[in-house]
Length: 71
Image 1 (cartoon, rainbow, N blue to C red):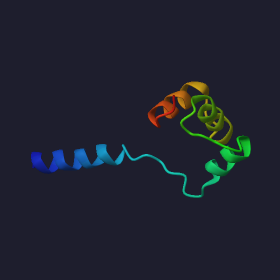
Image 2 (image 1 turned 90 degrees about the vertical axis):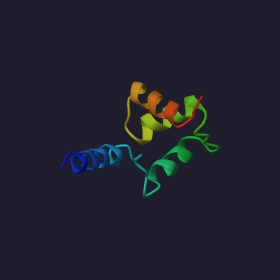
Image 3 (image 1 turned 60 degrees about the horizontal axis):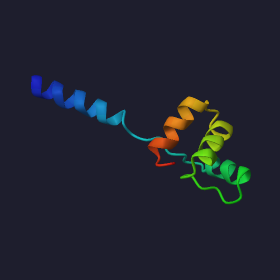
Image 4 (image 1 turned 135 degrees about the vertical axis):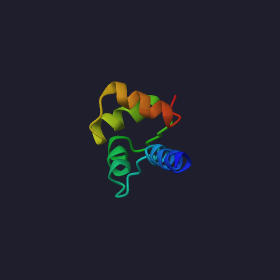
């Protein structure tokens, strides 16, 4: 019984780790409208696109961009 519980709990925890993907491509399109040569690895561009296109705030966008590899 404990093993089953541990497996179910692990599955739930791993499902929460999925990164959200933009299925429609609207965020990428929005970012390209802001910057003709949008570079998601550029911290300033990434944060600006996150704020404008994903309606984020500076703190969460900075964290998100850092996790995506922006510098």
